[in-house]
Image 1: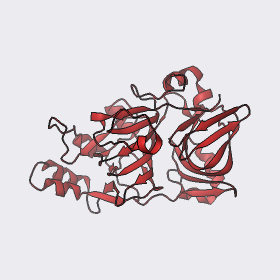
Image 2: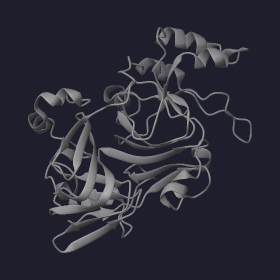
Image 3: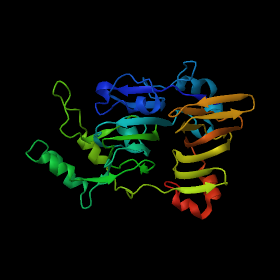
Length: 342
C-alpha cells in the first residue's frame, strides 16, 4: 500500500474551551470554530476517527487490511493517537492512569504520551509533575479547600511549572501530573485512549456558570513520581545529508525527528505502520507514486509500503510502534539517552 494523507477529526467548542484558531493560522486546517483545541490527525477513537482520502475511517481500514496496514507489532485495537493541539488558554491540570488501572476502572487503555512543542509564546510554561516537597497527600488537602478564600493560590503552588520553547520534547508516562500552558501549540503522540482525570481547572466556568467535572479521587489514586522535567535531548544519528533524533522508544510508541535536507530514504516496516507529520512542505516519492504533504499534514505509512524518499528541506516528526531490541542494538551505548528504552 502506498502512503496517504489522513484527514483529521476535531475537538472544539465546549469540548475544548481552552482552544483557539492557531491550527488554521499555522497550518491552514479547516477547523470548525475559533475554539478548536485538537486536530486528531491519526485517530481510532469512537466518534473521532480520522479518515483516508476516500472517506474510510481508520478502524475500517485496519479491519480491511490488517497487518498489511498496521504491522505485526500493532495487532488488535489500533494502538496510537496523534494530535495537534492549540492551547490559547491553559488546559486543566490532569493525570492519566496506566493500562492496569484504566482497564479495571474504565475498560479502556491507559495513557502514556509525549509532546513536541511547535510554538510557544514568550514566557509560556507547562505544568509537569508536582512541585518539590509536594506529595499526593498535601495535594488532596489543598484540593479539599478548593472553594476557600485563597485556595486557588495554594493549589497552584502544588504544581511544578516548566518554561518551554519551540522544539522541546517532553515524555509524560502514565501517572505524571501535567497541563499544557497558554500560548502553546504542540504535537502529541499517545496511546489510543481518552481516559483523563482532571485534578484542577482553575476557576474556569462555561457560559452558564458551570465548572467542568473533576475526578480528584481517581486522579490521586494514579499519581506517580514524575521523571525529570527538562526537555529530552534524544540521540542523534546523521548520515551527512540528513539527521535522525530518537527521543522516546517505550513499548507503546517511538518518537523521532527527521531533519531532511534533500532526500531521506524510507521504507515500510512489516512490524509497524509509521506516521510522518511534516513541519514544512515536502513530497514522498517512490516507484510509481508521488505524494505532496503540506505543513501540518500527517502521512500514514502502511507497514507494507514500498521504499520511498522524503524530498524537501524540512523537519518531519515520525511516530511508530518500535522494535525495542533492534533499536538497542542500533544505538548501542547511546540507547541510555532514549526515554523508555533503557
